[in-house]
Image 1 (cartoon, rainbow, N blue to C red):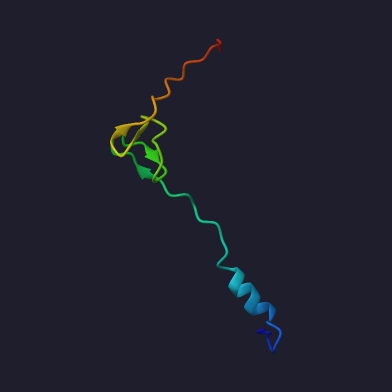
Image 2 (cartoon, rainbow, N blue to C red):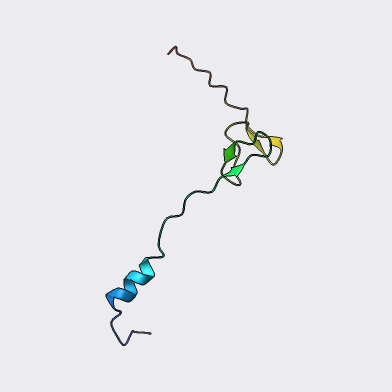
Length: 66
């Protein structure tokens, strides 16, 4: 079994951990309505995916009054 001969220094540890950061989510323009959407997902605005309407677009109809 592989066992380290030396203790890894705090400097080396923190240099390695410096790369463990969160990336900002990526957004692409929808080819139909050109609104921003996440890649490989149904557009929340127009409800299309790869040029086909998959989900009916949300018309913001509510059962109650505001």
